[in-house]
Image 1 (cartoon, rainbow, N blue to C red):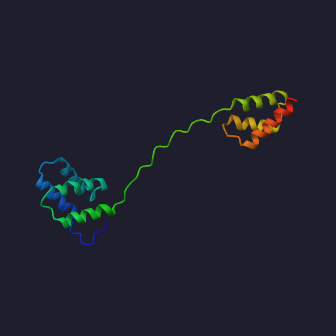
Image 2: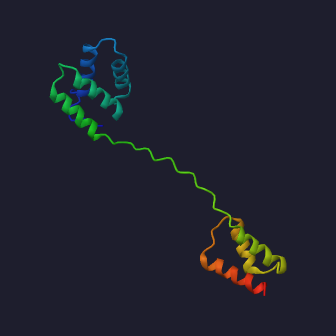
Image 3: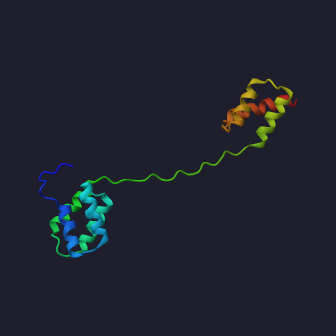
Length: 142
């Protein structure tokens, strides 16, 4: 982050003012130490500092407004939602019985072998494929 005037540091001024108004407060000492080491604070840390500085008297409103502008300038990080568990597809026993019945009589029927492979890999069968399988089954039982 490049500052136009590096001699003016609003965050450091507010941190020093808060440490003077509340000496020995662990939160402000921690923020001060992190700011001196890293040169910046996270958006959540700055929001906590801003909320505490609003309650404190003696900090100029212009500095608070500048701190709020710095906070608004920082990006907000969003966490994605936890993916919902995918339920395994329901095994249709009628389809399994039809496939087994056809393959017991015609074990090398290519189309039914395709349906079996699709069924075993838990791929859903579309309505036209189910109708085709039913047609094979009725023709076989005649």
